[in-house]
Image (cartoon, rainbow, N blue to C red; front, side, top):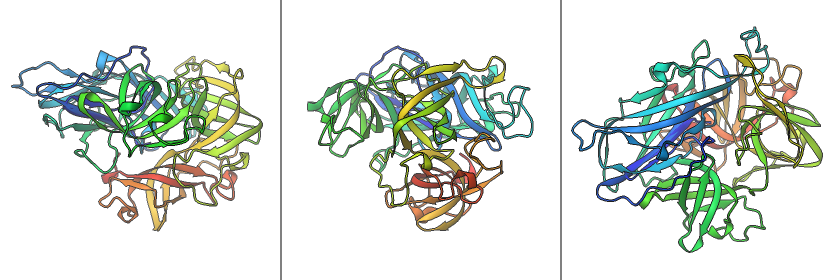
Length: 512
């Protein structure tokens, strides 16, 4: 996952961030319509996994975000970008090739000299591929969780270097991209130093309008629908409410036939859990959506995660999300899942055409590293472990039965080893973890995987945003579906899984 969050700024400001799960039930609304010299501003965030460490999950809470007015401004007070100062939990590891939208705020036109971000409550889950245990409690080949410390001097990070100072002009939205570099901020002792040089950087998003969405994804529950205005209100997992506008160009995906027969605002209904791709911030802080994807009904319970062990009867996944933020399905925890008789397997294509020959139809198509969304059979959920009792230990765990498994796009970062249009080979550190006694290869430093692209694949950050813009040795993040190879994961050292690329993101200068 490209790990980033974005914030749009203008005389009214928009703050976007990785779609994390909020801890607060405080509800806020879009800012009022800008008046005078108020302008829209947005913020986005991305992430950089650490070299040599298999970080499976890194979550941190953003408790404050503010812009600092330049000296000489009419007001010298910091401008908060988190309405109501509602903290937001961010799974940074979900953003290698994606970004997520957070919020909107009103920002007065003028010059700003810096951005201040305050973080708390980090949670780190790793896979120990070393040759010794960590702290005597994290064995080799095991998944372990730690609550690392944040240096008191780095809990609040102030960025004053480029692109600052920035000028917010009336009627001219501004977007900032905040980038986490995990291989820099996670120290050798696995503490977290957010204030380390180049640990967190900020870039300015291209000016709008642009050909592609800039502000990332926003997940939540539909509160109300105003079909005559082509708008709906969405309450996020951390308790904030936004007004979202759709147009004739907005795509609607994965809605069941019972919800609608014709794609459009009429597909939406109160209580649905959806994901909106935010492409802009309009007058009064109303968000503009280029795509709306159905996630589930409010009464349904699903969980999303990455497979690290599987068999014909069940699998284990690292939990990366659950659309209703059910606290009994702990993020960063482990779920041991049993397949019910007749369990269905399918690909969540989200409008993408899956080429012939790539299949996810049974347990035979499972492989470690796949991102899946799994339905929780009602009444089957049981807590089996509360989490570490010492500095290091097993993550919290649950077990349940499923009757439906969907293959979702996941993210892998590596360097391009060879090009053979429309495919290329990607070399990366073995991902994800797999238990030594399960279906996984011996630990190896690098594997090479085939990445397939199609006419629907999008490219970002290259000099030419197309396949022709790729070059050998480029460091890229690929967002796409992972399909097991013909030889299966047991022979992964010979034929590792194949990736169907939905998005390919370049990391110039081999930094992301």
